[in-house]
Image (cartoon, rainbow, N blue to C red; front, side, top):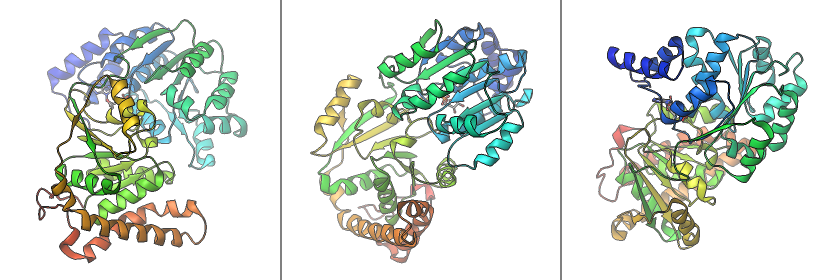
Length: 459
Ligand code: AMP
């Protein structure tokens, strides 16, 4: 939620944005979102974009990069209003939705119309929104290509600005072919902006293919993590991993926490185990249906749940304000993902904590991360005897979780994995019911008779 600025803060913010060349109307809209002044990536890239230059921005989620490309696009649109003015390509559905929300928030006063083209949502409804001739289209490459091929009357011949957001991610997700297809149908004479957290060789190739004499702006040193982030590792025997992670949930129960796992099934299971122990955990991963994913995210954002268990699909792009803690339940396979994951906390000068669980099998992978970030991390204090006090209850919670997953799979009626994953939300509710039925034993999971386990009364 945006915090309203005082009158003098608003005045200052408007002045700071207009000093970059942003018009008063849009500067006021930015201030109305609680932005006290441009972020670094905005200061560096907005003037360049407003001069009509192609921009390549190396910046991570949380840096304000959406505003860095949205404000110039909206301003150009004000000067030359037309349908299908800009196309923003994003790697994930959630990010696309958030980008369009930011366009709409910044452009509310100028009546900007956006369409979101993402998979998992009815093509027909999207075709209808394209029929309304929106100014800005935000979408995932696959679905944009689908519409270019199948939706009559939709084309990008008039496009003025193309923006590729999280280009490294777009390419990692194998969207190269779709991006090529899109590049073939957009005018050569356009402005292009490319944002990426990291400069990989694939991104460099894409940059050469679609940008003209770009101005490069970079806001943080390569792969650096911010100083306000406290980073720890926790060495755990693989067989007691769940016990350790739930010990952390208990220790950090007054915090909002994001936990990263490697697979969808792991995400489901860990969320259930934590729920069975009485923690407010909710899963989100790429194989849940779109409404379920957004529902989970909203519950987390609203504070109904304080632990979000996610795969890397959710690790980038999601606009989740104020995460206090990031736990890497699994060490990320790709070290750069570590930086993206922990970038969920310690934003905008706030402090944050990241704890990475390292088992005997992950040592090499973990050392790669330390090399990448150029830091040796300290161990998180977790006395084994205190942790293992929870062992029995964790085992029981795991057993119940397995049963719940089997039941959810069976409910899928042999329809295979898909149905089962759709049952995610049901599993979520079921988890709480089960433990409640078992009385106090599992409640708040703490090995200390409830101890800190208040969890801010989250259910
Ligand atoms: P992004 O990096 O675009 O994903 O933005 C991350 C968050 O920062 C979003 O919640 C934005 O609303 C917020 N934000 C963007 N620009 C600013 C700014 N200049 N000042 C404060 N917050 C901002």
